[in-house]
Length: 142
Image 1 (spheres, rainbow, N blue to C red):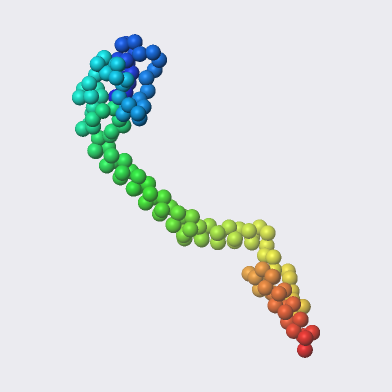
Image 2 (spheres, rainbow, N blue to C red):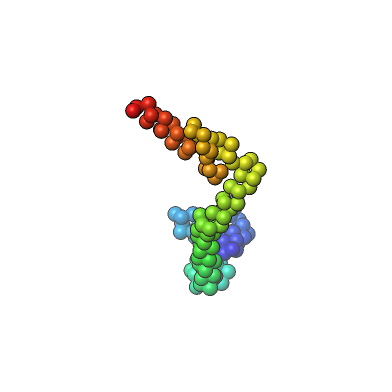
């Protein structure tokens, strides 16, 4: 906002085009126009205890922004730990697993091993087939 005042004053003084500050000139207007614009001490240019045109915010506002950022960080970490990686995610996974079992049935419910015994309803069938294949290979080795 402070630069707008200088831009308007430089335009009235005949500056060609739209002036933008540069680092080389320390954000000051060109030397030939400095007498035409408001001084650095003007309240239009220097505000909130800052000197010159910059994005200086009041101390109260800076503390408010810091508090908002810290609250956001804490809420974000709590969300990740409790919802995405914690008990909420575990609950949702268990619920989805039960829904999948009720809709699609269990994979191992209809399977049986080579010795005629059926597998547990909650198992996937992969363990029982690998154990039966290992027992059958051990029979061939003896």
